[in-house]
Length: 492
Image 1 (cartoon, rainbow, N blue to C red):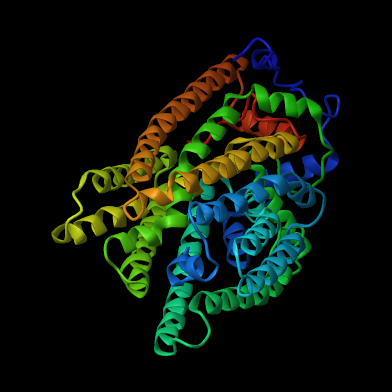
Image 2 (image 1 turned 90 degrees about the vertical axis):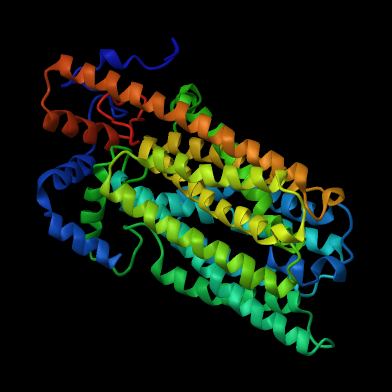
């Protein structure tokens, strides 16, 4: 730790530092006691039970896109995401998560409907910018909900459920898009398929926004939970020692400084950028890569995109099951997932472009979908391992900056002059996958070192495991950061 970092060796068991001048609030104490002995495992289980297609369909041609303009449509989205992320986070922190996301979804649906009427790059660019603005609350909301409802041991599984749900919806919409494309082929003078896709996705999102308004949010926002169930949900989250959602805290500048002293912040920044460069590029240009194999636009859906997403779903669920059965394997699962992506991208760059190798190249790109798991798991490290409400917000902002920068760069490495094979971009993606593994190994080593150091300090204090956990809960509910809370143990 740097000389400016908090000296956790000076923390005494009976006088652990607190933001309330050594005292914890009545609400925090109540929730901690509830977490320790009030609710049974069965009650917690019952609570948990309650709780680029348009490009291949003609948009480039119809809107007269040339050169890097298609790439810029992706970059513009993430630039807008970046610009709107701070005010979006502020709305989530100060308001209610469910209604904020519902309104964002409703507006997103309207904007997607408008894309069907775009005529040129300028119109598409303006709409893509607005899409980025209204979508900026979605990922932060999922992180807030994950941290406020689930325990650290459950974060990885919940994140792969989010990810597999996204892939599953992609399969469903791909099938519908396939039907739209087939109809457009049968009636070439009718509605352009990319316009039909925009109309469908926009309308579907508007309908879902109504559902989200009534069913989505943190435990204290959910209408369908009783007061006792809301209290129980807060008690479960206390065990994370990162602060539950049971009370609001003021913005604290000391936690801003702490965030930038924490090596975690820089691990988040580096790893998310490195992860987002290949994912941003392949999300935007994956369909074009399949077209370079010789597939038609419809074959790209049924022989490329759908199998790709199905493999992703299967691996997401297998990996989630592994993280539930084996604690502290999150980093190992991420690193193992990156290996096929690294191998697949490297093979695509090296294999000759011959018709006899079409299905080999298809297979190499197919297995890169396994690497998609790393992204959601990286994000879960925020609710699992960052304590202090302001510090969480600041670290989340850094994470989203990295996410936007990485995706912007990822879209730009796929240059129009390299079409259709995009070999330089594929080489860059392969290098990024290899670098991810190195950063993950270093990050896990840092966590292991911190946990061993803190365990030794607690032994010197002479505390039992129960006493240490109790003080850790109180510190966390008092809005103490993970860096200051000696009793906090990082999840691996």
